[in-house]
Length: 254
Image (cartoon, rainbow, N blue to C red; front, top):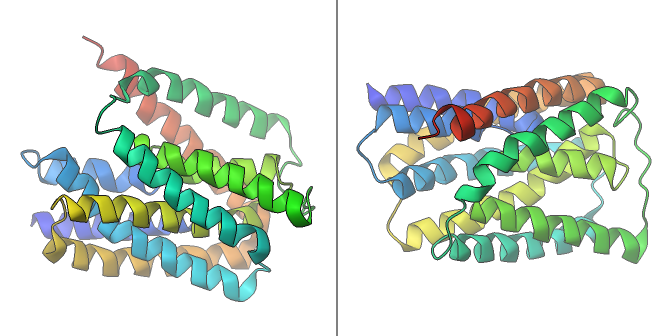
């Protein structure tokens, strides 16, 4: 029954993640609940083995309907991959525990800012062009990619928020761009976990199919309803992330 439970959770995670990120909020706790005695690295590896397919499928779907700014995004994806690998390596020698108590406060600031700026992300007006946009996107990709490899929670939401706030994208274009970068950071983490033997491929395959199915449904809804819908889902997901990460950081303090 465990595989059925995590497969259903993977489908729901793919749905949420394809719209605005945050699928790990659903899938990682489900894996830990279903397999409480498994090594954490193995469960993170299984999570990546499923989610990478969902983010890749969402990227393809968005690219067919949204005008992706490839000249900036492809270099950003490359440095995002490198940043995620560097972060994943660093976590093997340095504990990320200090981030646990800071993360809810950072997410709260993101939520408050988004709610205060009613027009934030409703209109697509890229702030940079040419080399400046490429440099900004690469900086974003390297920084958040490193964070994803080192710690991870909220990666998709940080990508979306920064594409909106810093680069001037609307929420729909930001989500589309975030999926490309999130796919590369997931690939980097999956490669590391697979190299270390921390992936259950037999379970990951079923989860991947469900994750893609959920991702395609979520992408379709986002494309149909536009930036306003994505903004609403973003607010819900960030609120849930604040509650979850806040509980993990503070309620379980020794």
